[in-house]
Image 1: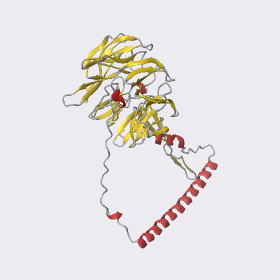
Image 2: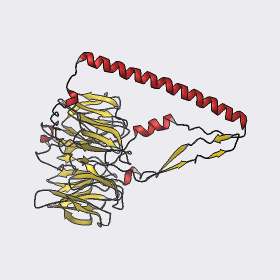
Image 3: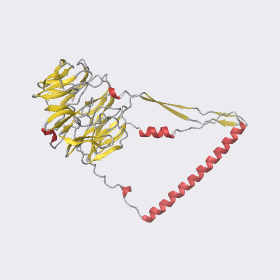
Image 4: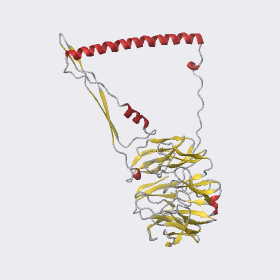
Length: 438
């Protein structure tokens, strides 16, 4: 399909060209993150009375007074500590069997807790804190007196977060949150946009830019204005778009392959390689960012089953990891293999081939997606349902858009009369787990 090599906005997942206003890719069917809205800075407040500069000599006198007060306070504190220690030692000598309890602090644990604060408005699944304080008791007699030091110990118990493969993004009142497989809200709606979880992380957008959260809703990679797209993590890396081209980050947000101004588009890694686009065309790089197969194609998809679909001279075929043709170019379009089948476009309709290139499901669909859990989204006319590996509809066509199943659920969409799109989740029987919401 020659228009893939044209300029303009492209699907961040498969690289297919997008039209202005497209919310879903016409090729892979995936939802596209909206363009990030610029943050308009608030006007600076008017100067307040205490912001007005004061006379410099008066300021110096004031500083000397403040310094003197601090020095005097410090001397008094030192004296009090010395008296306290001498009293404690005397008490220990008088009562050697008494245990003196001192508070201890795990600085490393505290630092770790501070680094994993939840995103604003996010409540981790279940966190309970209990504080226990020892009571202070005093026993007095005519000759002796002893006091037990009061200590506070805080114990935090956090239920292990849900596995990342059972959290799904949902839109509620124009904000995105995440539900589990039962349809229960786990991470409350608060994001401008959110993507699928993969390898424990999901991309999420705020007015400040794109970042990544973990399954507890905490920022693993804080949002940054310069990052406009973060694709799902794959093989430990996530393709990330910046104002200076595409690169790849790890789970802490550090650059493993720094943004390259020549990278117009980049795909997730698969089988050790990732498709990237330059002005010269599409090719494949390794995890070091080095070319394995140079940019020579008009389009390139992800590797699966040792094969990757590529477009060459306006037709698609499949290459191996060395760049050699395994299935010669003869299709108008082709997708990556999933569960041993790949959708191909022949005579204006889609069918599926096996890894040897032979037809398994005859071309008959107006759209065909990836198989997952034995089912794949496929369209007849304008409506989409789900077929099995024999090409028979297991869930009849009834949706305007539909994505492949993932861990037992599939996201499906309807066009609303006002032009918006309502999305929900179904299970493999076609029953609603999450009713469509705009």
